[in-house]
Image (cartoon, rainbow, N blue to C red; front, side, top):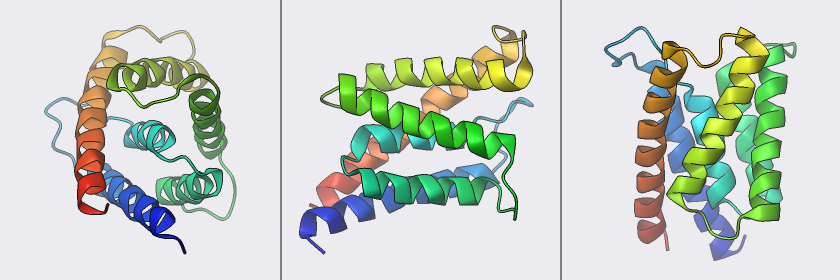
Length: 152
């Protein structure tokens, strides 16, 4: 294992560990739960360059989301969105930038809400969840930058 691959795996593990911890907490003052899985996929897609490493973390995120013996629509949707985010990033975006991450998160959150909530997309809960997701994205990306300095 090359040092670069090892460092990328360690930094990705930090992001996935944050996702796991945040998915188990209920510290939000409103009855809206942020989609930490989608946020983790956006951050991982923007910071991991190797496709196999990204697929490994994508499977980890999906396994943490719902560990079931069968495939649910939510798993298929998030898996497809994760691959879509990664492909979009590799084809169009050279360097990770926070505003591009926020824009990508917005687009894929709209897709997620369109799939699971129908016509009720641009309502107050959507924007509250987006606000929480952006805060979590900023924290996850900041921790990834910190881990990049530590594990370099």
